[in-house]
Length: 180
Image 1: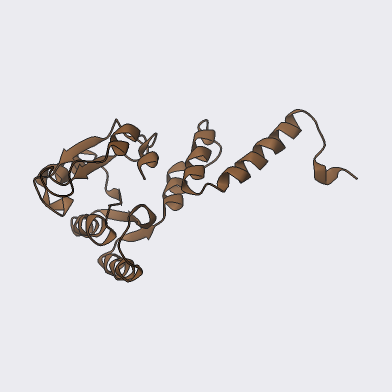
Image 2: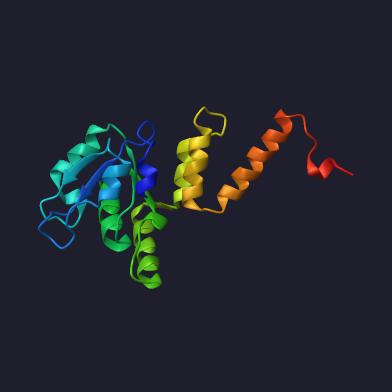
């Protein structure tokens, strides 16, 4: 979801966290910094659950938002723990399941059962993008189209087809389907 951080600040302020550098998890991956230079990095002091870090919770509260979008490296830990804790803290939480990962299908299934029972709403990346975008009738529609091509590359074919159709209309050409 690194690419998704770029350009979403007006819609969803990014708060990023990583485990403490001396741990095996190390520092935040560079791609996140590259794609979300505006995001606030909140270093943890070894806590596995980001929500157990008071600085992280304070950064989330400082956004003034009551709806959170959460993803994590490991679905059952990095995504689930803070998502459940945030729900318990009064937040509405959406978990981006395909932006998180785990080691087995079974682990994913029991984690999804757990977070849903706790009140977390599971989503996929395309649904998150669509909810943030809301409409194609906006000046940055082309940038959103590029977001979708990163979510599922085959979407580029649909965009190519749409752009070609627009070109045909603009040039007052005839669509292939209208030709005899």
